[in-house]
Image 1 (cartoon, rainbow, N blue to C red):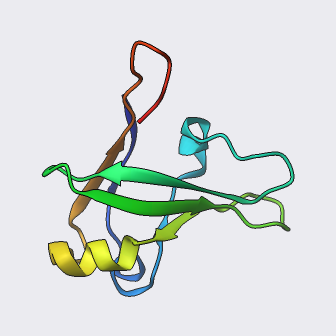
Image 2: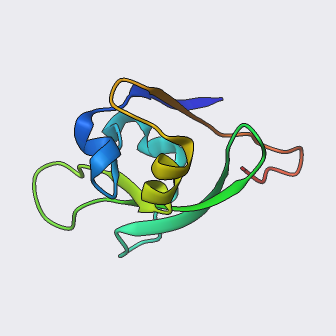
Length: 98
């Protein structure tokens, strides 16, 4: 199931984080009292990447972003502004999401 699809902005490729759409937060369970959670993502070659979704602690909106190995991923894949990134989640028969 698709969580988000985004054309990368200049800041997504030059900063160490990807601005993440608030409407896609449904895919992550942030522990109570915490503003971030780490997860493993697989690229199209099944290479794992350790990423972290975070939301700000204060303010009117959560304004989520993805960091962790994001900047390494961008560099290794040679991503640039207007490249498209899609994040999907797959639920296994036992209910585990990956």
